[in-house]
Length: 393
Ligand code: ADP
Ligand code: MG
Image 1 (tube, helix red, strand yellow):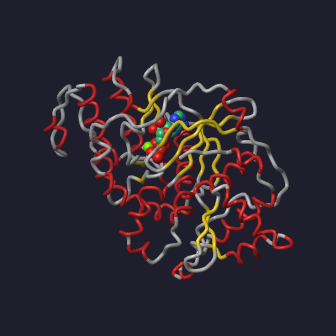
Image 2 (cartoon, helix red, strand yellow):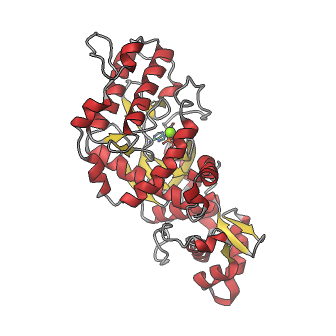
Image 3 (cartoon, helix red, strand yellow):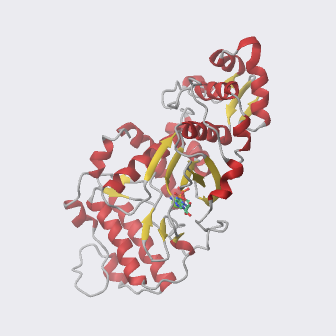
């Protein structure tokens, strides 16, 4: 998705006031009635309606009059709210080009005032899976309040908390800079997703490093759950960085062993196919066998769990609550059904345009943004407290 932030520079305080009013209304309405938006924004002389037209023109809102006259935020509208908040906080000052398209996110370069280039991940949980979730899960069928804003915001919150904790515990992950709504800002990783790498100087070493990461994660109490060639970045010195954490679970999760084994299997499969590494398959699959050969052994979840640490507990105390985790895990379960196997298969390179990470500040000049202070808008709107019944009609 193209992110044209040009309009962001021309939007007025009133524009943002109305956009925020729609966001607040979406806590309990899928489509927010126009009168409610007007009431929340409380602009003088019917100003809200003029502003709504302008926001619609810039595709920040979607208009729906099928049941009543109302509006909802588009992805772009939600992007603008997060970007504006982060710009006002001084986290970055310009948005550059897109550097990644994930399954459920768009990644852009952003630049700080002093020219440091960072990565901004905009979560888009509704894009692929939410429709699937919505049709499959009973708990959601009756609660349309679990909309994409809520899920995307939750995913960002979780990713930020996990990235920070993993960084603090010495894992090779991007440095977590800040987070707002569905948006996470982190350091830019120099390198490429492993899926794009055709050759390695030391495939054995890289393999062992990567496998070691899955094991060390589990020793810290966590399982990545989407540990594959798309979520491992590698640089020219073959240094490994892992990314993408919204689906991580604790080793005490009821399906922990399955998730762990699947992560391990993805790595084995990928290295066998892409780099022709050989492993003893039978030994690998058998849980109880004594593994004494020189070959790399399949790590045993039961052994690791015995020594596993408390990072999962620490994270529960980090502001990412148990309820948040439960909500997102219900979502992850579905994801698993949808994805199982697919990511592990040998895959063609992802369609990511020109993955060089060395943008110069010049690239950002036309997209630089101006801080606006003192408009008294909320920094964020927690989408969690919603009254489901209001959404039924
Ligand atoms: P998704 O959850 O949608 O799969 P990812 O976090 O895996 O999103 O990111 C998608 C792609 O964006 C990655 O494969 C990678 O190419 C790029 N990317 C993500 N984070 C960074 C980063 N910090 N630095 C550089 N590139 C990144
Ligand atoms: Mg990914």
